[in-house]
Every structure is written in C-alpha cells, then in structure tokens.
Length: 341
Image (cartoon, rainbow, N blue to C red; front, side, top):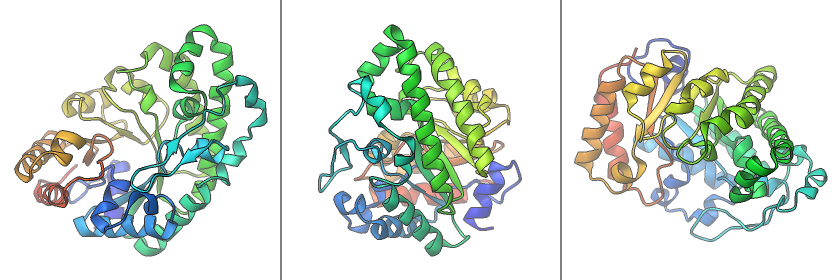
C-alpha cells in the first residue's frame, strides 16, 4: 500500500494496513536538508526538494506545503520582508483603512506575490513523488486572511463595533480563498487544508465563529466541491471541541486536532463523520522532547486512535530546529503500531 493510498483510504473511511503518517511539517524540514529558510521560501525547486526528500527520509505517507500565514496578503500587494533565517514577515495591513477594500481584487491572490512559486513547487512535488505520496496544500481561510489584511486587534474590535464592515471583509477574504484554491487545483495536488488559527476558541468566541465565520466556511467548501476538490480540510489551533461539530458541518473531509484536545474526546464528538489528524505536541514532544518521550507519546496516541479515522501527526506545525532523531522515532514507533480501521 503506497502512502498516497493509505492516506486516501483513511479519508474515505476504508481499512488500511496501518495508520498513515502525515505530520504538519514543511519549513521545519529545511534545516535538516541544510537549507536556510530564506532560500526555502524563495525558490520553488528547493521547496519541493526539501518536502520530498524529507518525506522519504523519514518514511512519511505524504507531504504538506505552505507559504506561511502571509501568503495571500502578499499576493494582494502587502509588503512582506524575507529574513535569511526565518519565514516571511508581514509589514503592512492593506486594510488598516477599510476604504481600500474596493481597490483589491480577489483574483490577484491566484497569480501575484509568491503564489506562482507555490504552484511551481506543488507541481514539482507531484513530478518527483508521482502517485506514491499524498500531497496537501495549505492555504489560509477567510478569518486568517482577514486578520492579515486588517490586523488581528482591529478585526476583533470590528466584530463588536462594526459587524457589517467586517462582514464585507470576510466575504472578500472568502473570495480570495476560493480564487487561490482554484489555481492550486491546477497543480494536481491531492488535497487542500485551510489554516484558521484565529478561529481558535482559546482566542475567539465560538458564538462569533458561528455567526460570522461558519457561513463563509460552508460557502468555501461548497465552492471547492464545484471546482472538483476531493479532499478539503481545516486547521484550527487550540481546543477546538466547542466548534468541532460546526467544523464538521461545513462538509470538510479532514479536521486537524491540536495537542490540547484529548484524542478520545475528539473521536467521540466526530462520530466517524470526518477524518481527524493529530495530535502530538510539536514543542514539548517533537522540538524539545527526547527519543524516549517521542516514542512513548506516539505509541500512546496510536493506541488511543487505532479504531478511528485518524492520520498520525503533530497537533500543529513542527518547528525548525526539531531533531531528526525525534522525527525518526515518531515514524518508527507509528509504523510499528497496530493497523487502523
């Protein structure tokens, strides 16, 4: 069974020989390949090589690629700095003045900034990996895009003081996500997942989510289905249990579960309606843990999720500087565990 088949089978609720491994790991692989982050984020060939080589080195079943949280804002014209040893840094909120909204075009997010580089990298991954690995593209969802354009604080204030204005921005951001998804589909990637860290109930009221964001998530998923996307997911950081049922109601196929959430509780609430992915701590386990801790935590997770539709992963991004031996311990322990459903 190839990695691609293994991931797709779990997503479709079919039996697999073992639970698939697809950690949230992209730029975190660069240093392990001897690549500085400044080069990684500015060269499509390097980005693709790091993804595929890293995946094969540790025996993962798929690759995930991301431009970072600034991707769509930069494509729309925001100033972004690229340090030599870090990810892109946003230096401008295009909608600090909301009157600028009418000057922006959603389609620009599909063809400007680093989006052409991202699409090139995805195509290279498909060419290098063939049909053996599952490929997952990361884009930003409507609320994350809004926060990058308007600023997090102003976005939250607007939801209370100017809900009609922020609704216009959220509608625009949804159109941006749809435009970016349409062009990403042309890169022959297997699935797309939307980063929505700002939706976290640790940070953002579930009532606000249901009233202002959930309808846009539903529209986004429906639009992508019409395009032909077969695998659509959402990543929301923190304790997602208060909105897990809402996220599932969007019609998504994949929901990430962060490390703060007990795996068994997430499985119980999901009720087999969706595939879940997670949920080892990227910091205390992967980055700063030792091999013994990684192995123990991985085996415990495998036991907890063995009968579920589950993809083994970190709960959030595995950061640069994570020791190679910890990634290897995760992969070896997971492969040695019992088969999934």
